[in-house]
Length: 133
Image 1 (cartoon, rainbow, N blue to C red):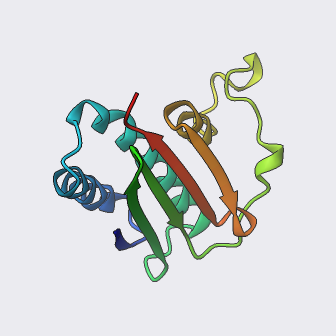
Image 2 (image 1 turned 60 degrees about the horizontal axis):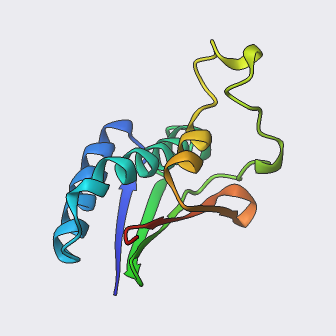
């Protein structure tokens, strides 16, 4: 079973994403101990789509699809932007980047998730979170 949420590109819609994730946890009877880790990665991905992908254009949508299978939650987050070159990202932990205000989102997604892939030139991210040991 797959669930889908479509939001306009406004940062305050992260609250809608949080409620959507709450509903997913209820529908699949998932342990809430995983919620904060998943929400951190998911909210970073959605914020990247809103800010970088859709350039805060409220007429553009971010679509989130989620499914649960074999002890893992699978997310597909897609924006309407042109994508980005995900192979050339700078390391936010390097000394030169520590004081920068941006550049940590994908790092945080990779740190919280069990698998992260970019598709469609970077305008779609696929994220997997294992919930079972």
